[in-house]
Image (cartoon, rainbow, N blue to C red; front, side, top):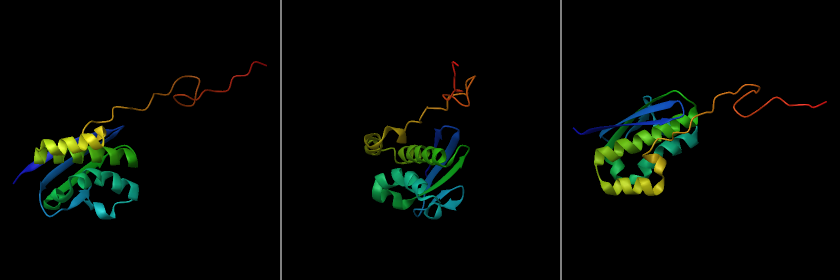
Length: 132
């Protein structure tokens, strides 16, 4: 039985996806993707699966994700799924489809939150300055 593993990161969220032969089941943290809420997260994670079309009918994808927020987890999961599918099929055509759609499917987003700076409430916001 063929198995492929892929990982993805976004901000502080880390996802690991396992792709293996199956009946087209997709789960995030043991919950079926069909009932995962909110809907925007479900659609984001489904992007790489939708791009490969009929090939997704005979694979199972198990995703484990932790850390970060809802969208960070969704984008980390999406990268993990795309990488796992790419290594499972080992087809340059699939890699070309993913890169043509969006580079972030195969490459982690390296942007991180700026640290809080002195004299302010956050990275950019500062206390108001008065001259009189």
